[in-house]
Image (tube, rainbow over all chains, first blue to last red; front, side, top):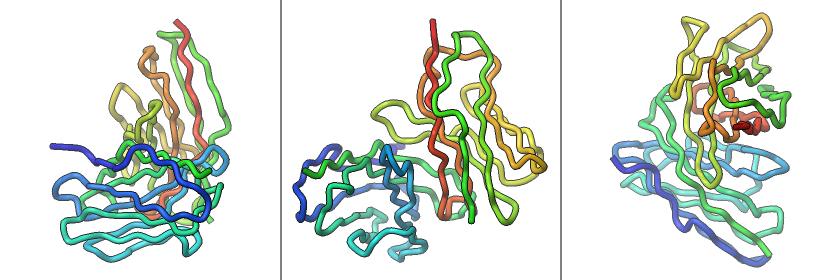
Length: 113
Length: 112
């Protein structure tokens, strides 16, 4: 079974632009979560989607948004990029029960210049 | 508020030596606790998790962790470290996978 895939793997943007990251979960998984990883703040939870609905949300500004499609694929969008948004964005998926094992993708490395 | 502390930013051990990575948590209820490992350029891989029951949890790659409620700790151990164990290790706490909070991580270097 294929793992969690994220595209693109690397991305360079400039301040003020917007960006969309994509995540394809493991087949059969209905929950997708997004995390931001930076050297300064570490790993922080952004949001979780389950069956096309946002189920949980972390403490990030409204510039960060996401959505999930009927095939469970998810996209994350960041508008009006800031330098501080440079990070590794990780996506994770699991079947749907909160105690299921969560599997992470390799991440998208976003650099904002 | 829930939080996780990993006191050691960087640990160096010799190959074949034993390993213990420390994790302390703050949580209002019975916590769900996790250990993940991240190799360079990779995502996170779950080593083990604790929800309830036996406080000594066995994981993959020969790792184990012990939940000690009285000390609010969930330390990760391995009796004999291999060079391939060099990576960054994260402890996390949450209500299952919901709103998981991660520690800052401990980077493990393995000397030959």
